[in-house]
Amino acid sequence: MSNRLRVGIVGIGNRSLPKRPDTSNWDGWASLVASHEGMILTCACDPALDARDRLVDRGYLNREDVFPDLEGLLAQRDVDALIISSPAEFHADAIGLAGEAGLHVLVEKPFVTDVDDGRRLADAFNARQLTCCVIQNWRYKDVGAKIQAFIESGSLGTVGHVFFRYVRNRENPNYPAYIFEEAHPLLYAMGIHHFDLIRFSLNDEFHSVIGQSFKPPWSHYQSVTGVNLTFRTHNDVIVIYSGTISSKNTCLPLESLIIEGEKGTLVNESDWSDPPLLFYPEGAKTPVDLTSVSVGCDIKTQYDRSDQKILDHFFRAIAYGDPPLCTAKDALESVVAVEKCREACETGELILF
Ligand SMILES: NC(=O)c1ccc[n+]([C@@H]2O[C@H](COP(=O)([O-])OP(=O)(O)OC[C@H]3O[C@@H](n4cnc5c(N)ncnc54)[C@H](O)[C@@H]3O)[C@@H](O)[C@H]2O)c1
Image (cartoon, rainbow, N blue to C red):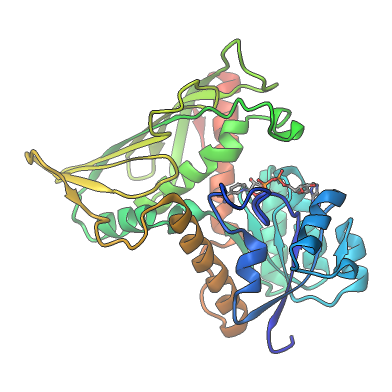
């Protein structure tokens, strides 16, 4: 490894390099790597010429440093780590190639779309003592971090049940065509954030799930776009999750999370897990704002801060052996949750984890 960690990016879409930076919710991986003092962006790949052009035109890399595919990149460039931000269905192949080449990986959620692939890859990275971390950023925004700390401190008491409602209008025909062809897009695109946040916050794992899926007649998606699920965790917490990406609503907050414990109720109503996180102690008429000390509660600051934290921990895990934030093995349990939900919706049966 050179003095700085040499990083390549796989997939130069919106998440890596926003097409419209002025309206984007984040700066993106290219910018964050370029400004990280321990990292240097040395190469990238994407099959789309316009994506490669954007990276070169914005001055992040030279033309000879960008490749149409990962095989070409690996054959011609020395690199220590990859950030994988291609569509979910391509994650497993890219992680596999990276592992064979001895590279560390930071991969966007969902880690993989197939649990067996995920298990095989997590084991392979462990065996080779390579770092493989997953970008489960809902955990590391201020709200997620605060919920986890609040529950862990005992301030909520024993948790009884959780309600999560998601109402999103993602029926935008201008989105890339593949989005409308993906299986269970609500679960893999957003449910995985929410399930991961719940696992992390409760420090608990799902034990069973039952539910149904649905899709309204106006949907552009091939697959179902809504679910209604009831989970039970190992600690007997009931989690009721209802969501859709076919809502016509553009006013209501997208996310509504209520966690009830014996000492009161935690509430977060926001679009992307943004502050405030409110706590209503038992019997109180007014809430306590648990995130009032957060600096920069706006959507973009919250994304960028958690992305910087994730990138920095990835760097520190490789450079100094610090414990990684969200390992492949940990993130795999959130993929398991998505797969079990699919099975529950498709069979109508109670599915055990
Ligand atoms: N953590 C978050 O908050 C968050 C937010 C948005 C997206 N994501 C995740 O980031 C990833 C990318 O999402 P996006 O919004 O940037 O998508 P996007 O459609 O904007 O971009 C994907 C890019 O990957 C390229 N690509 C396609 N096949 C590829 C391959 N085999 N190898 C390399 N590149 C390939 C495409 O040409 C495109 O440029 C997905 O896994 C998505 O779930 C995470």
